[in-house]
Image (tube, rainbow, N blue to C red; front, side):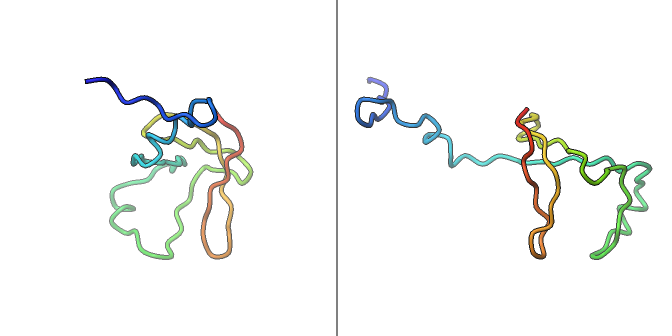
Length: 89
């Protein structure tokens, strides 16, 4: 049985990402939280503030499935916390 050929548009190979765009992945943004203990974890609640070593304006790593893919910064958009890509890794 022959393998399925990649669809072509106007003689060019179609976007190779089409085959994998729907696959799930895990996106992670990491921030260091020094001296975080199990008691802090147990006491987590909505509205609680956790002190970090992250400095405003400092890029944070953005990982997909555990692999560094970009650097990013946090931004507030309306009432949500967002991540803006600043540099691809």
